[in-house]
Length: 385
Image 1 (tube, rainbow, N blue to C red):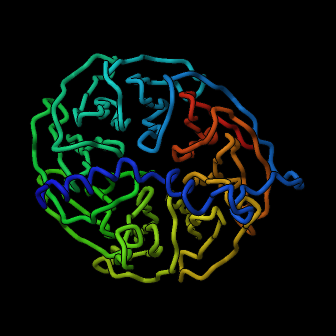
Image 2: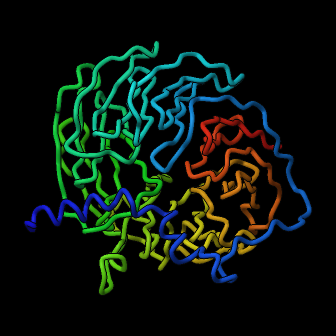
Image 3: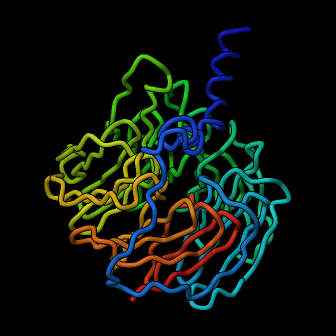
């Protein structure tokens, strides 16, 4: 067996090294009651959370799937190849597309081009009537949602390569690659395009800012550095979606840290906290929120990174990446519940069950409430008052 083949085999094992697998073999094993999910407890309701609408957008779910909102519409995809555009006000399906193959990631959209990735690394783009626009091949499997904007469709593949395709034609515009570890998590990761830059976390513990027009790397910052004696111990992926608040760019990693950089000062790190998340973080103007790998929720001050509060009432419930709404910060869990915590002190304020088994997709905050993509292929809008 060649060394090259061995490295490819190790890299391909990223597909199997999911958060669920890690949970099943260690943190959440039922053999030790210490890691059992916390039971739901009584609390004094501080908000009212209700299901406004629920609609099927396909079947199944997974870490590579997250809804995207553009204007008054939501775009969503599911592993069975279904791609949908949904009206945020009513839940009415505006169009449905079919990639005709199993998907490993989706969806990315700018409201004109909507892209998904199939199991063999094919990128399929639809126009805004749900008709296939073009398809092309990435360098390897794609397990995080494509990002669409600035005239390009950008994907990050399992060989740690970022590629941009012309949004109109599918032609390859540029690609860059960075060395990566032998193993990486299969969990919720997202790239964003903001202020003319593509921001992406990488499995090597770094954040990158890239010019989406030509692929020129404008800046790189270190969230965490791999440590440990084994490949498993050295996993240090940046997880979730990068967060922008004013001049701050923040990220969090597994078995690493949470760090905020000041982009107005050349990307200088202004604070860091030792922290391990396997799902990601969210922010508002004052605080950063994340659940650690044991699903203990923390809030940190954006000003200096000090811990404001922590809440362990949801420990081991395999919390999703959070969403911040004016009334609370929300997390999904392994039983299809959405929990709402006070942004001030972390107290439980409300919960609602949306069904569909475990919520693995990151929650999406909107001006109408929280959007949830469930494990059985439903899209649910939860209103909060």
